[in-house]
Image 1 (cartoon, helix red, strand yellow):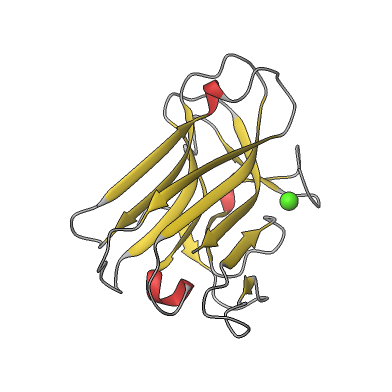
Image 2: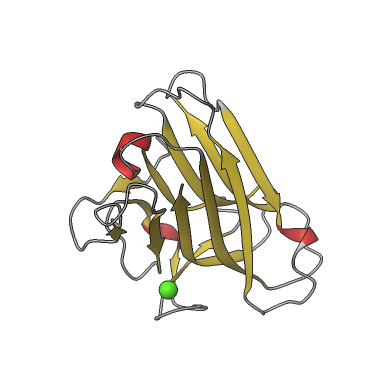
Length: 173
Ligand SMILES: [Ca+2]
């Protein structure tokens, strides 16, 4: 686990479990940064400078290349089989072009990480500075994926560029 990263356990419920109505319903998990339950929070990234919702976002820069992060076992995200995980977040950059910021989604077992890794390059999606843009990606979950496999998603800045992220959403299908 990265230095300075803590697990918050119970503050409020952000898991919206809809599978009571139908086993085929997708599970939606979202985070507006202002509600941090169940997420891996690097408090050094929390910022009031920019926000897509509420007053907080998570800022990546040279000191903190990783934003807040969602990380949980697949079995905790949805009962039954999972075929696909769609992940998204709203991202803002102060300068363009931005060459080294990506929204990451990955599957891993803690030993051979990552088993699946998807990085959505922000530079292909954001042409204007200081405007929030929704970045999205998806992971196809391999069949018979073990229940102890974890999914995680976060924003990553690999070369000291500043970016803000807010309003993550994860849809488990
Ligand atoms: Ca927010």
